[in-house]
Image (cartoon, rainbow, N blue to C red; front, top):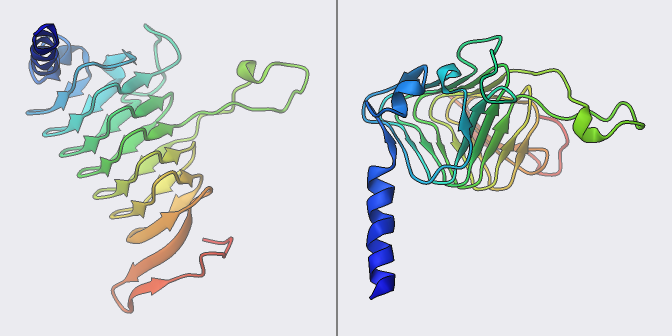
Length: 208
């Protein structure tokens, strides 16, 4: 009986504690489009004024979504994180922007995807790695793309339109429009051309 009660409470929270268009929490964002939703519970969300979310976009539970390093930081760009229309961001994912992360329209991800435009350096072996950071490099994900479960998108990556990235892949560079990429680092295994249709590449190839 008590378990049933807790289940009903949790369901109520998931529906009523979600961040939805027009809510007090949604008004903290630089933009929060019509019929968009961030499901409850979240993990870390801060500096929402630098985050723009399009319309009809749903962001799953336990997502981290942030701009800058700390709450209240004045960021150099605006928006820092931009998510388009009709996107679906999977449960447990993290989108951590410092300079520019742009996610196009109709982009869907699996669970536990991580996207960032800044990483840690290791140039000075006398200092903790946690105290060394690399310059921010913009990240862009094109319209209509799909990122599978556990994909990591690292600084400077550019993913084209209608690109499929396989589960647990690590994107470190440029993936052109209409391709399929897998692996760590992600390599193209199929690509579509209007002239030749789909073509496959040698999975063992190290070039893109």
